[in-house]
Amino acid sequence: MKAKGHPIGATGVSQAVEAFKQLLRKAEKGRQADIKSGKWLTHNVGGTGHYAYVTIYGLEKR
Image (cartoon, rainbow, N blue to C red):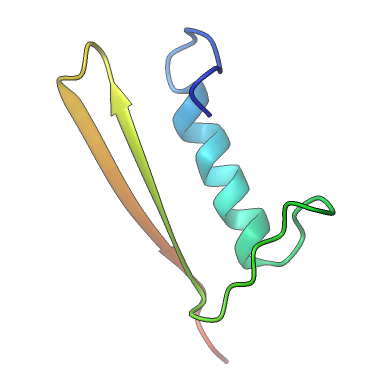
């Protein structure tokens, strides 16, 4: 994820897409994690290190 280049938001967006795919168990073969909790966490640092974001994703059990 570190090498997404310099477009603003590219790393954070790709992390969100990956989290969504993982939670739905639709990640590419060989990349799918064994998720038992139904939760996923991403961490992203922006700018020159002044901004840090932690996002927790989860699926509702129905």
